[in-house]
Structure formats: structure tokens, C-alpha cells
Length: 140
Image (tube, rainbow, N blue to C red; front, top):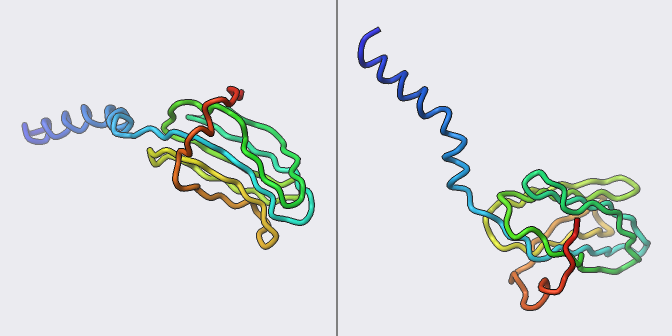
């Protein structure tokens, strides 16, 4: 093996193990301020809502939503995470999952509507809204 090939291989073997670490250093954290649910149907719905922060479950509950209603999930979410994953599933079927990892402050709503069989996700703007998440209990 000539010197150039040996140096190239040495460089690749040094950088490859660090590539995951280097990409993690450049990731920016995401801050979830609010999570709300809304039922726009004219019938009551049961919604199973699960939220993970960096693969750790921080919220996992079934919610009974009355017809044409909405509510804020009263929690203090983890201060920062590189990614949140939210899964919403209706009791009669229809599931949707989203990954929130863009490094911004996020206020998020899960909506059940008449014209969609799956729950919809939407980001609220502006976020955060003053005074909304300061007195919430910590959820587990």
C-alpha cells in the first residue's frame, strides 16, 4: 500500500466514528411550550395521545373529548429536547405521528375534524403565548 492510500484510510477511520457525535453537536434543541387538543366533530371522541422527548415518554393518556370542544394539556414539558415525537390515535382507528425537531419554540395542536379520518397536527403562531405554561403541573 502506498503512503497516499494509507493516509486516506487513516483519515476515514478517524472521522467515521466521530460523525454521529459531530452531527449531534450541531443539532439545536426544540422547546415545546403548549400542547392542545381539539374535537371539531359533532360527536364525542376518545383520543390516545402519546408524547416522547428524546425517546423518553413524557405523556401517555387517553382523553375523552366532548363534541365541538378543545382543551390545553396542562403540563410543564421538558425544557429542551433534540426531538419530540407525538402520536395521536382515535379509538375508532385513524392514527397520525409527527416529529418536532426543528430547534424552535413550538405550540402544537392536535385536531379531530369531520372531514378527516386521522387527527391533524398544526403549529400555533405566535409561540410562546405569554402566561400560558408557567403554572402548569409537571406531567409524567
